[in-house]
Image 1 (cartoon, rainbow, N blue to C red):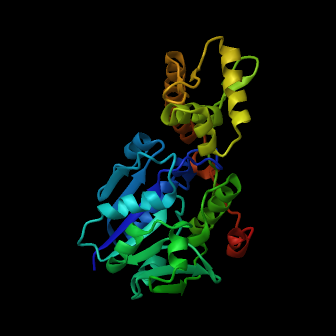
Image 2 (image 1 turned 30 degrees about the horizontal axis):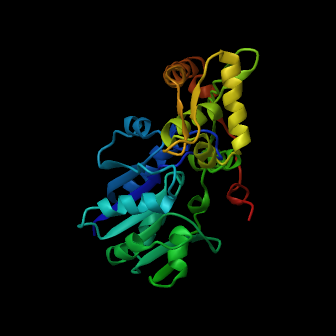
Image 3 (image 1 turned 90 degrees about the vertical axis):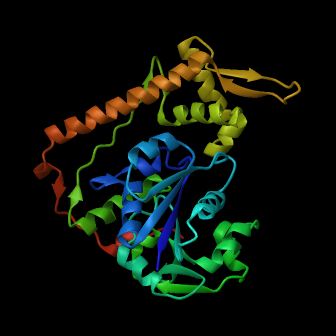
Length: 328
């Protein structure tokens, strides 16, 4: 049996307010854990569908057996579109294919091996009767997933009953643990510490820049990035799940503090109007990105230097039941 995997990692991480794939988890990152778990379960081919921050992800995951595709329309499509893009690129020799978001990093490899032992078109893992990720497709189920255009993503397809579905109780809370919100991320950190047998002191570096007021933050920088990619303040705000008025106020604050236009607006006209970054706005975004990258690298080295391993380990424990508890 040849096993492949498709990871959807094209999203904006809008609710998390930070780029989820590269958040620290133990001694690595969320996306690195996700890839490693799939490979440990037998996935020889791992296709990662990127979108937002695609170049950063490619630099980070320079691993054997990992293939990258970019969803050029990531700002206007859902996760299913990314999974379909990756699924279409899976080699025809693959008998089984795992499908998963990129922020489900702590699924145990033995859980996925149990799924591979099931013979069904689709296998969905359960924890205490509730479904999670990854899903496992048999090769003959691929056309149905590629052709589906209905509502509800993969859940919507499964609700149609067109594919044979096997649900497997796993006893693995990791199948339901993602990093959609800061609270979810904290649960992941606690559960990873439990699996590792200890808690780890970690560095959480937030870079905010301003004058009288702070105006260059993780959120405002993401807004500039999305304006550049979507050509519209309104579309950028929609992608980030914030109101137009909030996004407009963020732009106004930047321009008021800096004294020059950051965003250029075109009203009406044949093309219907839109927005783009000014040349100085694009330069500002690039400067923040490069500064943040170098600062993070330096901070990580200094953290390791000044906080030796003996100071970064805790003996605290948390029960699986507490960690896995989530709001319904």
